[in-house]
View 1 (cartoon, rainbow, N blue to C red):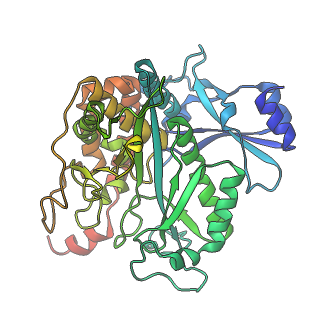
View 2 (tube, rainbow, N blue to C red):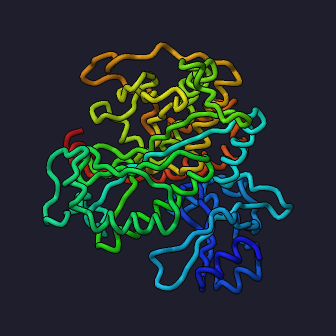
Length: 447
C-alpha cells in the first residue's frame, strides 16, 4: 500500500482535491472521488492553467508560450503534501501535484518546477537552504462591491480598530474565534505555524512559520492562504493577502528569513566561528545586486507597488543592516548557528514558490559571482522625511528590469521568464485601462 493509499484509508477519505499553484499562486486542479483518484494515480489538466492572469485572461503572446492545440500536461501527486481539508463537509483530502509534460519532463512553466530547479543548483554545491516565512494579512469587513473601499473587520466588541495596536494581545483577542479556528485547521493539516502577532495596521496580523525546507514551506504557505480564508469565512469575515488593501494602512508582507547549511555537516555556512562568513557576504551581495531585477516576483501585482511607500515603514532601499528594520535586507540578532538574512521585499500577495525561488536565485548568483555587499547601515540612513525609493514603483517597470537581467533570466529559465512577463504585462495593461476616482476628481475639470 502506498503512502497516499494508506492516508486515504486511515481517514476514510471520500473525495480528493488534486491541486497545483498557477502563476499567481492560486489553487487550480480537480476534485476526484477517492476510488477514481486511486485508479488513475496521475491526472491531466490543460497546461494553459499555468499561464492565466489574475483576471482569468491570457497574455498577448499566449500561443508563443503554450501549444496552440491547448494540450494537457500530466499531474503527479507528491505524497509528502497529502493533508486533510478540515473545513470540508465530508472527509476530504488535498494533495499538491508536480506538473509534467507528456514526454515525462517537469513542466518548465510550473511554479513548483522553478523552485525545484533552484534547489537543485544548491544541491550540486553541497548546500541546503533553510527558510522561514512570515506572512501578514488583514481581516476585513465583507465587501462584494469593488467600488467601495475596504474596511477593517469588527471584532467581538463590535468596534473596528481606529488606532495603531502593534503587538496588542487584546486586539488579537477581538478575533479569537477566527484565530482558534485557524489554529485548529492548521493543526489538522500539519502546518508548522509558530507565533501570531497583531501588526501595526487595523485588524492586521502576522503569522510565522517554523524554519525548514524551502519547497515544504512554499507548499505550506500555499495551503495556509486557503486555510485562513476558509477560517475567516466561517465567521463572516474576509481575510486578504493584498499587498496594500487600504490607503491609510500599512501594506502586508511575506518576509523570508534564509540561511544555508552544509549538506554533509549540517553546519550553517553563513557562520565562520561566530562571525559572518565570506559566503554570507557573497549571498548578501547577490541579494543587493539582483533584487531590483527580481522585484516583480516579490511584488507580482499592480497593487503590490502601493506598498513601497516612503512613509509607511516599507522596504524601499537596497540597504542592509544588523537588526535594522529600516533596511530592505535585515540581519536579525541570533546565535552564530542561526545566522540568517531577512528579505523584507516580498509582499503577502506573492506566489510563495516563485518568491522563494527568486530570493534563493539572487543569493546563489551572489555566491557564484563572489559579489560584495555595501557597508551596513545604522539607523535610518539618510534620515529624510521622504527618503528616495530605490526600487521599481510599477509592475511594468519591474518587468523591464527583469527582462534586462540576463543572469536572472538564465537561472530561472528563459521560457518561464517569457511566460511570466507575458502574463504580468497582460495584467498591467488591463489595469491601466481603468480610470480611477482620483483622476475623475482632480483632472476632470482642472486640466
